[in-house]
Image (cartoon, rainbow over all chains, first blue to last red; front, top):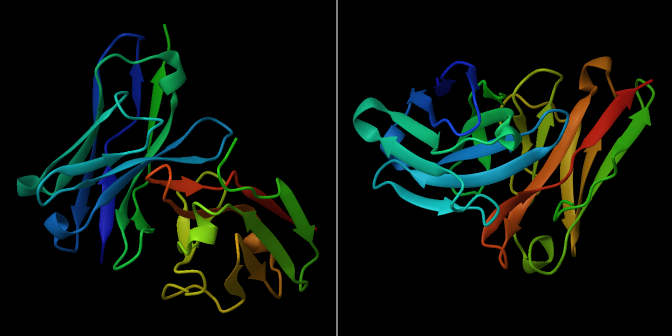
Length: 119
Length: 111
């Protein structure tokens, strides 16, 4: 069974750094792209980008390029999303999801990580 | 403002049929890129409902179907049930943006 398990909720102050994780199991983690999606409170889904754990190739949405960094460690089946300096506007639920076979679709989803940035 | 446009809300009575539209442009749906649909129940992660315009993942009831024509796509739900009350999102690729894009979401209310 394919599963993606994300790290727990975070509460941070503006300017702090943060790295959240997404651990995959039940499939060959290195050979499927992992996507990240933001959902701000009460709002819709926003595609942030994707990372390929096999070689850490990344593709960012223009809206998120330079704002976040995606990475992976295939040795522990885990992908990451990180910020170097959080802003209050980064407050949101963040989902990771695995790309499907042959389609640019997010087939399997993690449970989400809520990030709250407040002074 | 989302690249793909969906109606903010639709509603229907139990047993009825509803459709949700997703309108794009020549750089996404109209470029031949496939459309996918997700269902998000309140307080939960999204779930893939339709992929590749009209394919259902294993376990998704055949009450859900997708179609695509020109620069638009549609999700149809027949035999509406109370448990279908959720937010629905379309998604495609945008060749100009070089990004995957979502619609703004449609809230389905079962009356």
